Image (cartoon, rainbow over all chains, first blue to last red; front, side, top):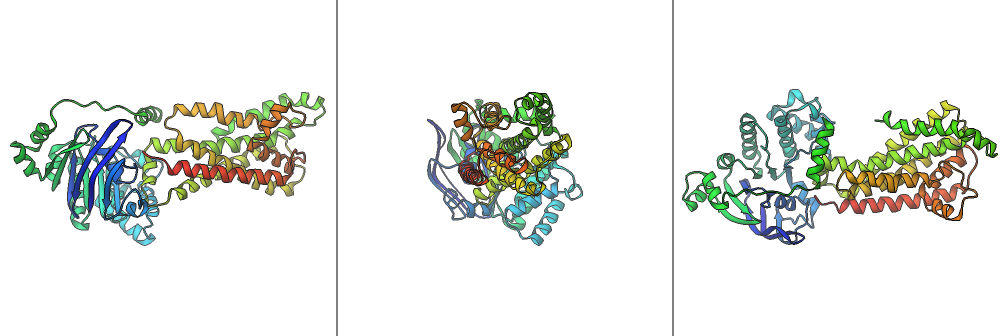
Length: 261
Length: 228
């Protein structure tokens, strides 16, 4: 479903993604793990047409996101690392706008919005403004929205960041259910190893822009002769702490947060 | 927001209109409030349309921009939609200011011309909403806003003849004002509302349409190049 060969992305003389290759088969839940600044989000941006790769080949359901952007965009849904809802609209309006953007026919749009909002337990709040929602509710709404146009692939970039264990649990249960019900391929990143271990069929670990290991959770544990995925992860990526450089948009986001409050 | 953004045009209209009125009259140019009203309408259209385009920055900020960028819709469509949306708000804003001008004592010479004047307001709004989107696509952070305000928006306003007549200007100023698209928008409004003008309506129409095409094309190009 997703095929990546020798993918490279350079920002100036910094190689964010360095010769990465992997493959995700249809219907699979694939976890992409790595420390901060390892290249996870950059890879997702290239897979989802937001960034142009410097080199290498990407196939999304047989399509090249750089050249057949619109066709490729129809095939996937994405939940970004930071929220991408329109705060000034209600939950239902956010879903509806998404459906219009993805050319989902009106009747089907209403049916699926209702089905998904009920599934993600947001139906009784559908007419409330998103700005009044809690972090967990916003995330659930974003994931429900990602499923609206029946994508073949769903990208989840750290969807559980900042959520309490209850919300995290519930969220993954919903994602797993949808994955089985509609055979959606799921590509996720997370920093919670227990989540990856529980949810993912296969895992790739990326560090300094290179993939250091790939396989099922059990294979990774055997490979590193450790008992848990967390230990396996630490033995593969080391335990030093990575500092990510804050860019202009991070600073802006911080400022906007001050303004909004 | 619409109410809040009425403050500035009101200040210009009332303070300049009544403050400079006596001097203007003594110089033999008639009523200043009649003269400045089209300029103030043009100003509010300019400000609202440019800033609606720069509003892209907020979409980028709050992440909503990404949702539209990964949608299977050509970027040009999104950009044109943004431009027309901004132009609609700006035109409504211009209409509200027109009504306020009427309350303050402004009287158009011929009411039949008002609908045509509105068409010119729409055209002016499209020109500057296109410019706004082009700027908004290129700006990375909020600090740039101040720069744009002082070096793009205010010069466009002050060099447009919104506040002074275009006849008898020093050569340099005369040349610069003729390169400012807003000059033609405001001149057309004056032509239709108070019957004095520097250019013919046809010239204004051609210049504004040309500017609209250039800015919308430039805006589309900038918008399609956005990478996150």
